[in-house]
Image (cartoon, rainbow, N blue to C red; front, side, top):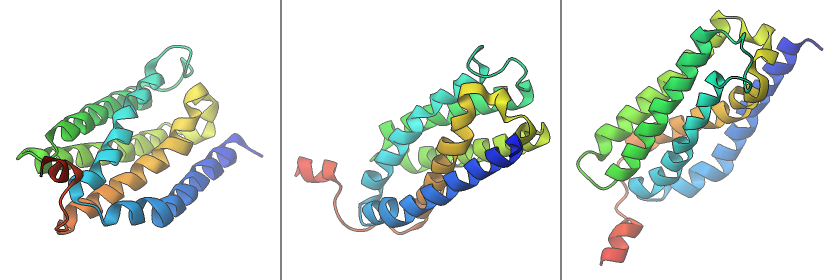
Length: 171
């Protein structure tokens, strides 16, 4: 089977499986929590997006991996990671909504732009250029995009009136 087909199948199955997990486990577990408590695990997950820097580390990805894709994906992920960490620090403060929106918009745009760049440079025709980073767009990116959708849902809902764990501990 051609590499492009294997890459496509891997990415689609990543979305299908993470979608099922989000629908059956992630959303039910987070939807009843106060927004700050629901956002914390997702923001922590996205804090690990610094692993996208692997796209620009020699020997991890091929030296022939187009820079247009590698650099934008790597540094976009780093920006999303930093914004996620700042948003965690801001939970419960006046800055919380602005930092969460900034994280979610930048993080989502970064992933969608990486798909665009990957398509523009025909990455699916030579997925071997990804080297060890092959698992980022096929396994991790689907999870990250799906959790961005969860964050959008959490931010657009009215906050439920249950005190957060932090507020409960303070009482």
